[in-house]
Length: 133
Image (cartoon, rainbow, N blue to C red):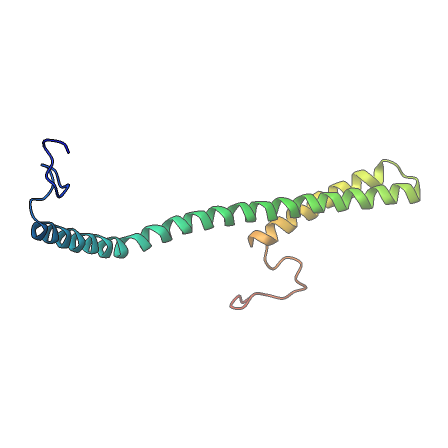
C-alpha cells in the first residue's frame, strides 16, 4: 500500500466520509436536471431554426433545378422538332433555327408561369378570381 492512501482507497483529495459524497451527488443531480430542463425549453427552437435553414436551402435548390430543367426542356423540344422538320422538308438549317427560337420562347414562358409572373397568359380568357374589367 502507498503511504498516502487510506485503506478505503479514497486518497487525500476524495471526500472524507460517505455522507458528504451523497449530499454532493444529490446537489449535482439536481443541477443537472435543472440544466436539462432549461436546455429542453431552448433547444427545440434552435433546432427548428436549423431545420428551417436546411429545408429552405433544399427547397431553393429544388426550385432552381425545376426552373432550369423547364427552360432546357423547352429548348430541347424546339431543337428536336426543328431537326425533324429539316429532315422531312429538306429546309436545313431554317427549321432548326426557327424552332430553336420558338423553344427558347416556350422555355422562358414555362419558367415565368412556374414563378407566377405570367399566370393568366394562355389560359383561354380565364381570369383569376377577384380581377374585374
